[in-house]
Length: 212
Image 1: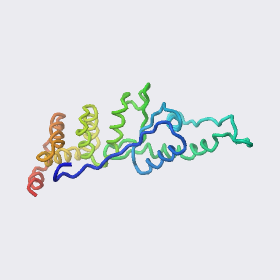
Image 2: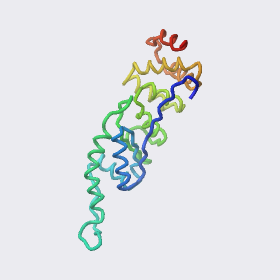
Image 3: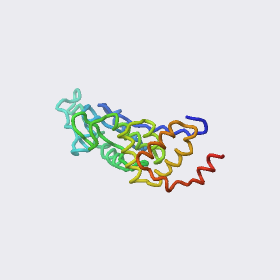
Image 4: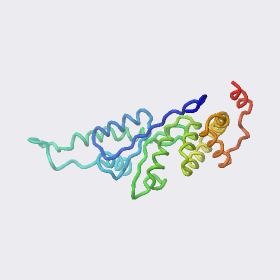
């Protein structure tokens, strides 16, 4: 970061590709920490099992192969874990979190528009990362730093709807940092381009902060 600039918290996202019981535990632990998860729904394994449960309410069938010397299906333990953990994953993943008040569990498919936001994995991951921001100012600053027009536009739209005061605060913060940070200058220019209203900025605070 630039001198005098408060570093932005580093948001995180878990990308789930296939996987088994260990991945299932990781997904649950990640959601318990209020972190976003993006599941590749067509990648097989637990990723597809999570998607099928969330979409259709189904579990994989028990195998017709058995554990050696028993009549226990070889995947029974795994299916039992799914039955125990998937309802919890569904509940946690459906909760609105962060500055954008968005659900923390989303899905990506290369062939179908699973979540109604188009088939662009990079954008889906960036959107999920932004959902890990607790404050609107953080989400806006990150979105503009990435310089991805569709992500910026979507973030500003969400911020205006969910937290208009926070959007004003982002504009105010960017104005303060603009003298020392190229990223902050970019935020100011972007917010103006997207018709951010400066009428509610506390200019007395800008003067005080700039002269501390």
